Length: 261
Figure 1 (cartoon, rainbow, N blue to C red):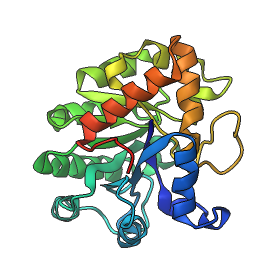
Figure 2 (cartoon, rainbow, N blue to C red; figure 1 turned 60 degrees about the horizontal axis):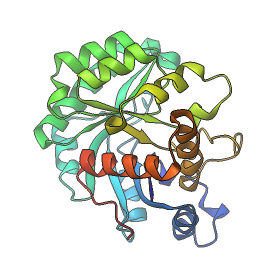
Figure 3 (tube, helix red, strand yellow; figure 1 turned 180 degrees about the horizontal axis):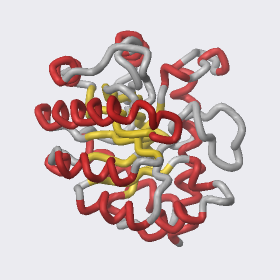
């Protein structure tokens, strides 16, 4: 049993799957993936994401505005708290900082990040954090805003062991996407090998970042199995061990069951 702890189901090309979203879930189940967390990236598409996933109890949701989304409505603490009270919402995000493409919007990103942390603390729900080329500011804001009170996950981790250690100290988990399977991802693989089992998560970030051997194709939740298999090999563990540990971590962090639905 596996969990895809971070995907964007409203971004998938559902025409590729017979039965639409049901086809996505069937393909996932055939690979042993029984639970999914679909993560919002803006407020405009939130109602459609809720409608899309409502018939499927195995899908949990997270509400937030991605730091690179600058064409829509700005998040407020009040709105995030109101949306975050929906029972299927288990986290706030994704949020964070991305200076790779958006250094010119750094001030706005930092403001939004603080808004999300405040909402998460008010709700008592964990954070899903995106960070790229913004290590110092990400850690500083997490500390300043007492994000350790709720914890969360640094998703799609692409940093080094020093960053992972600080994340652990701040009560955060670390999640690995298909990037960990790439040949040149030595630094990320080192972290995946050394990370304490109780803080480990796996994800697809689908439809992006398909893992080897599917690299270059549109990603899907079923392929989190490839990520888990690769990490199991790195750690010298069985796939069953990695699946059990990451599913338990998901359940504990987000407060949801991981039994098949």
